[in-house]
Amino acid sequence: MKCTHEHQTHDNHSHTHCHDHGKTPLILYFIGLITAIIALFLNEEFDLLKNILFSIAMITAGYHVVVLEGIGETIENTKRRKFFTPNSHILMGLAALGASILGNFWEGALLIFIFSGAHFLEEFAEGKSKKEITKLLEMNPTSARLVTSDGEIKHIDVSDLKVGDTVQVLNGDQVPIDGKIISGTTSIDESSINGESIPKEKFEGDHVYGSTINGTGTFTMEVTKENEDTVFAKILKLVSQNQDNQTKVAGIIEKYEPRYVNLILVLVPLMILIGVTVFNWPWTQSFYRGLVLLVAASPCALAAATVSVTLSATSNLAKKGILSKGSAYLSQLASIESIAFDKTGTLTKGEPEVTHYHFSDSVHEEEIIDIIVALEKQSNHPLAAAILDKFKAKNQLDIEVNNQVGQGLTGDYNGDHYRIGKPSSFEKVDNEYQELNQKLSIEGKTVVYVAKNEQVIGLIALMDLPKEHAEATINYFKQLGVHTTLITGDSELTGKVVAEQLGIDEVIANVMPEDKSQIIDQQKEKYGITAMVGDGVNDAPALVNADVGIAMGDGTDVAVEVSDLVLMENDLSKLMYSHTVSSKMNKVIWQNIIFAMVIVCCLVLVSFLGLTDMAISVIIHEGSTLVVILNGLRLLMSK
Image (cartoon, rainbow, N blue to C red; front, top):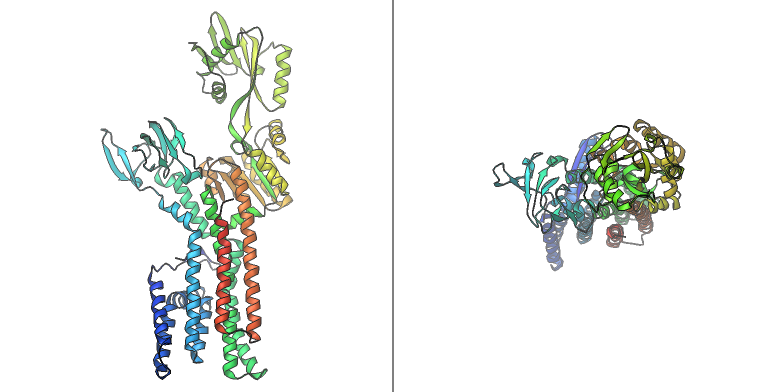
């Protein structure tokens, strides 16, 4: 199968070419092959019948490639563009026709057999690179087990589910839609959306995603998104955009292919005339050499130079949970000279963690931790969750808690008054805690004091820590000479601390969301091609404005929607992998282009000198096209 997806051309008309005609082309090809074999066994006295059979063989074997794709698309494109726009396949049809005019019906048939056979092999090879994307499209869930208000199970289409519906998912079933578990526990294979092969354990309150595969547990879930808004639906949309988009090189080749074919159609008659008038060749010899030139100069290998490469690269990335809206953006990624990162949720985990704590020697640490947990578990502040993750109570205390704005959490226990609050809310603090607070604040950490009867007895420091692969990612781009920038709305002190930890070249802090896009403009002007990595709504303008916008998959829908590349799992190592694959993609494309052009030039030269015949030209020509296709398929292999 070979489909050229709908895209916009320079004259703003969209069109779709699809060459999926099932098994019919192959059946016709073999009918033609059998017909030609029968003709070969006929005696010379049946010359007329032989030539008729060879002609039938040419028409049947070449119907799909020459008639439909050559003549058919030439007519279609000419009508649409209002000027003659030939398909490169028409050159082979003309060469076969020319051979027949000279009486070389067998040679014309052989040309069609080799050309069409090679074309089917090319389509098979290209189909291999589409395999992962096709598998992805086939994974779209279609049915769900709806739990009705009276507790009955009803089988319905996924498209009929609404936000708030309750759905049951049995062990081994596909999760039908995005939602939240309301009862039950399980483990889920989420490789279809994030490329991670290890199943994730899921409990009540955890989010689950449509198209993922449930493990051994059965659970019920509440639908949280409409079918068209699910993570998987967005993946399918990105895949569709990816297949419609192409590299700059591919666009140039597609644009100039008709002009090149027109040039060949002018040069061939000119060469025939020159052969007769200048070199005194007989008309038949001159005409034959013109036909050989027609075959040799056909740009099939050049036209195929990018197709398998870009499809293989994007398929490779799709297997790893990395999706792009088109190979053009991957090509750009390989050429970036500057990359800017949002801080929170992109380079850092997006949630504070306790990094340091200190209590006075005069207090019993186990008891004070019990009190801290009792106070914090009644707070909904983000810092409370981090503190509760760090400290576990030995004894569950029942303390009445007051949450006072500006004062923090307060409560009484065993006749003493306890308070947890920000340092500025305390009037009298020992030098020990003032110095420690100052030291930790310089390190970019948020500090809270713990006080007993308004006397500070402890200190807890928290910080949003860098992600696992953040430092390696920054180092990767710096080694390649790419300028790295941290853009953050946080204070300059916090930004500089993170930048120093990770080795980032430049920090731009105290940035308002509306300023981020302008900063990207400045980066582009100063350094060149610029990428932006972000995850929030406030990053959207910068993601759109960057040459390559890269969104973290767990980020907001808006960030994912406007980005050119999506890392389905918040794993920065996938960004390094994407850059490596995109660089390789560009190298292989140019390898293919140079190889294809060298072959064409050599064939044109030897055909002009009369050192080759039509059959050998076709074999070398189509062989080079297959080499180009197979070279592109190397990118299917993971690194």
